[in-house]
Image (cartoon, rainbow, N blue to C red; front, side, top):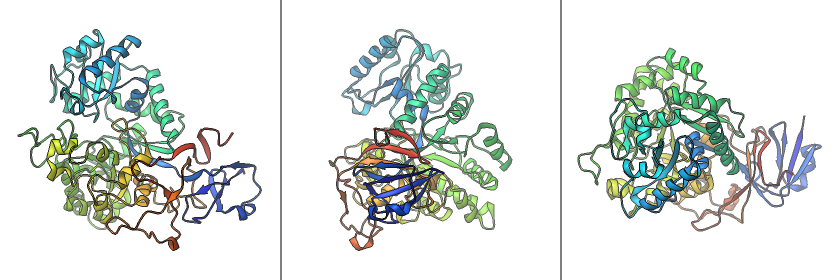
Length: 537
């Protein structure tokens, strides 16, 4: 038995909001308290001086794409491209410095460029000099590809273009072809780069949203077999029609659940999110539906019967409402105790950006978890944002209404959808509080909980202690450098917890816009140090 005591800091815990120390015994939190009582923790094998640092529960990123996010770190990151010309310049420079293999780039966003258009196939061919190249848009629902990669795609599915970016099924085929050109060493380097970055941000677990098919399965197996710094929970995008199929899919692939990017529709930026009314900037286009209502119901019934967690990617109002209706239809088919059985599986809705009152009520009734990304609103919300440009203000303003979902009793889990937005849980928590639509944000405690305990709830873990700093909880922790802790002003529109000092609710760092966000100093998973800037030296 090994006992480690962390002292002389600040500890975010409801067990003792004045706590300055904690003890970890064999990976489990065994004691929390103040300096005056630290001797009661036991005789330590090691004592760590926190020097005033704040210890918080580690974050869970509930929606990531590890390979793509890692390739944005080890490959070509285009999120900083200021224009089409700048984007092509970055491609040329990267191609010159990395002459071998497929050129993988990510992050271009044409709506922010003065040219207001993506690169053409011919422009990309000129920039890469005849080699395979794949450049995904920021939302990873469309991409431009070079001619050398196009020849590797044998058919021309829906969404194909010979000149512009590919979308829909064509994008999935092109992405798989590009992945097939990656070496095992490239995949491993990308996986480790991303998971290391997550650990450096205080993230103690990620939920990988893997594609089905040979390329996606190979990547998922490699990721789950990797001895990386933090655990990975694997979500496989495979629809099933029976309980036997559901169980067999997990046994065959090693996945933990059947959901993640099991897409009902696409994304707003690529105009593939499925809408009940056409896009404002593309009259006649309602987006794309990839699963029918019946397919969604069948998947839910099959997974629930098998005791397997299911999930769906749904963004547009048509898609999100379809999942809501399917939850209720599944409850009818499952019969007695159906809502209890559904809730026990913690089925998930990824994104749920355009959830209306009926969908929210359906999610609450069936115990569904909404896995959401606050940085989507930060990046594309507001009166001048992409959502308003694509949908009009009347549909854009109510999007990503965290407060409405939470008030209805829907469990929330926050994540990044990396590489769509970068891993940065404190920024996401702040975005979850300071929503671009007044009244749609959460309290600081609510947003923080969604990115910590909420992620464990989204993984089907219902232990009260997990995701907290409480004796008996796993020591999944982040040690951060933070300024004075802030007690937010009472706000009846978002507050669901007491702001009275007598409530002894643990405080959080200042999350007001412009304030310095906490910096991670160390990250622990089950008491094991997976990232350290010197705290544990």
